[in-house]
Length: 130
Image 1 (cartoon, one colour):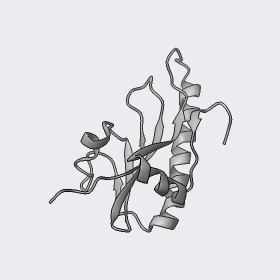
Image 2: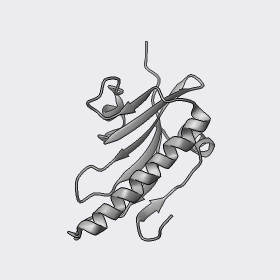
Image 3: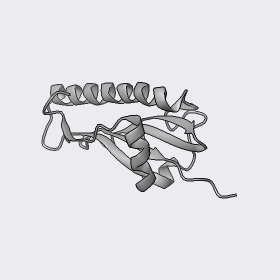
Image 4: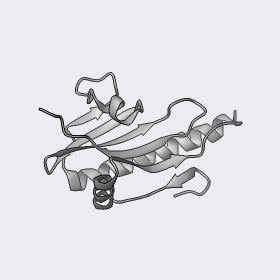
């Protein structure tokens, strides 16, 4: 991973991430540096490219363990988990969801606002009450 692009990098593999979300419902795998006090487009573009590439690599890695995704898309796409935003208080730009061992897991990339960092997160969706 290139130096200088990340504020934090918790580069867990799929099995480690599954264990981590058993303890906490969601974890950050990677967080870019923020863009406060920066108007440099190159700085922004480099971080966006790096974090998007990181997200794509994690999607491939996690698919090898979790199987084929049951959903890929954004908040306006059909099949987006309705309770995601209310559960995790974040609007993801893009989300991949798997069903694995009876539970649902999501990998997301988000950026709340232009000045904020890009965040790649992994989460276990809560069971729906009947």
